[in-house]
Length: 138
Image (cartoon, rainbow, N blue to C red):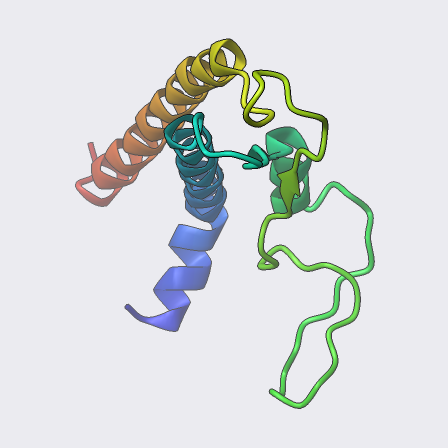
């Protein structure tokens, strides 16, 4: 894809933010599924991300200094939109006698995250439909 089209259409349409939204939701789904699959693993510590904080970081509303690396030898300064989400490991004590995975909480988080992903996917589909209609001059 041409760099001009990328900057003029795709970047200004909000599609990269929708993509980041879906990527965060997908990562959270994997972490929750991992927690549920390790419910009987001794000493396992549940993992999650702060979805809202990571989304705010992706949007750029965290007011941190951001520096773009232009050379592989440069040292990163601050956090950038492209930085990896911070995975939070719950170091609380065992709650079920084996580890700290709370099945009820994980299932509720899984359902809520599924709804979040579905809404994000539908919004992105509508954005693409709008772009398609604009290109077809409808």
